[in-house]
Amino acid sequence: MENLNDTKVTAFLDKIKAEWPGFVERFEFKTASVIYVYLKKGISSGDFLGKLSKKVERLVDFNNPIILYHIESDGLVLRSHPINWYSAINTLSP
Image (cartoon, rainbow, N blue to C red; front, side, top):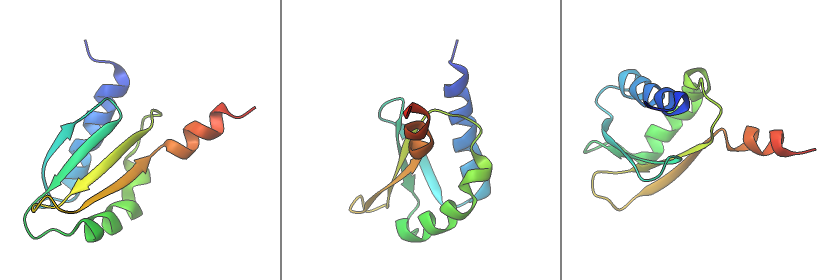
């Protein structure tokens, strides 16, 4: 059985794909916290990040930190987008 956080992360990725149809080709889990987002041809990583970062907070319903790496279709551009990293650091502080 999948971990509840894993299920929530998968649901989060499904929400991204639904919110921005035509932007995402596929997702690939490299580790539990590192996810590659392969963008469709003609979609700029910068544009996608700009649109995503404005709405992402309302889509997150999990606590574990993840990093999304946006990869353009040519494979040359790789941008990181940390989710929940700062909140995880703050909760560890005394």
